[in-house]
Length: 531
Image 1 (cartoon, rainbow, N blue to C red):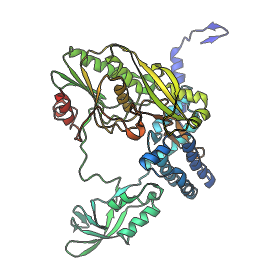
Image 2 (cartoon, one colour):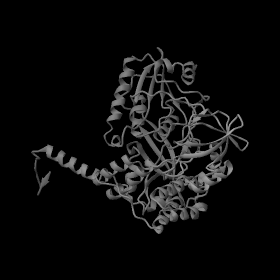
Image 3 (cartoon, helix red, strand yellow):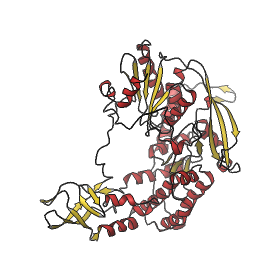
Image 4 (cartoon, one colour):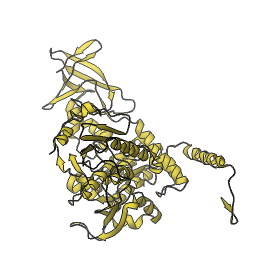
């Protein structure tokens, strides 16, 4: 540190660490208390969401056009009324979440979880984060994800329900107080109502009323809603196959009922990065995520750790592999730096330059605080961006409302991995965010072939990080995309995902990430057999 032009050495460096630790603990401490809100306060939050969608969202109009999403503008009066009538914080959250689900039907869209709020609060306090939200506002917002995590909105009976032509039957045997309710017993009444009347009741009087989407799916399940915090289950009148009738209390089971047939899932290893030799000619790398924790955006140690592991694996192969499979199926993304530093640049022999287009609403750029905008944009690995030029908007986009940029990126080779064969990247609908970025970059520079099925579309190579949207009175903080990345073919990543180069049919994933199970995987067999 310095004083009056003289440099003074800190003789007690541990003291600085201790002071920083105490400050961090004081910032992380404290309680997130429930806000006291009037009906007018609640109304303002819903109106704020609608204005944000109208002025800043690049996706609401496209969602309505391409995905058939309900109109957020047409539904605004309904949700204002819901908000004004909300009798509890739980109700207000369900109202705001229901309206948000329309506005955030594509792209990154979620209530920011508590751990992200906590660490952004610390970053804001130490001025390493600037998202236009104060430490106190981050602390206030922590109340809402904690409340949301404790809510139960879905419940089901301890047996499957099977619907046939407006009538409902048990799909499994069940016991009540020592009496058997056999599979195939008909459900005559629920809580004293016919099945059709009960369905009307829950659609109009439970959390389902906040859902703007068609509710026909509810008819399939019949008993699917946790009606209130004190709700324990249903009184059901059954007609047994024997002809007898039975009235029984059916206890609820929290959550959404599982599918009739469990979806096959690979048993993931503890390690995020797994490197295996499949055959003498084929190597395999599995990356579960591009993110460890919120702190990994700062320290990057997990990137360095995985890169070292990949390098060691490929060096030990002594160049014998002519194919390398990089498996990122169901990778939900994370830090784009992982993609460039671990999975692209160490495979390059020379620099590559490529372009991509991104659209934003002009008002978002004009109204966002310039220092906040710089923070949002600098996190998208700006060291790779060498030019940004405003471009003519695509057909159907008003230049008065939209700004489109042609962004040029240049990737420089880093210390080369010991591999020079063909690379195949396995992708599917579970690939999101930075994983979409990885697939899109690979397609543009042509250093690998994408194999599998279209990505999930929540990402793509963008212009800025997803901003946080804070509701002004309740303090809830949501994340919502403000940019519109485009695929190389001109489609929109958030709406359509990214198409693979080699489309593969539906298939169960491997049972586990082991050599034995991977060699049985249909997709991997196809890649090994590629001419």
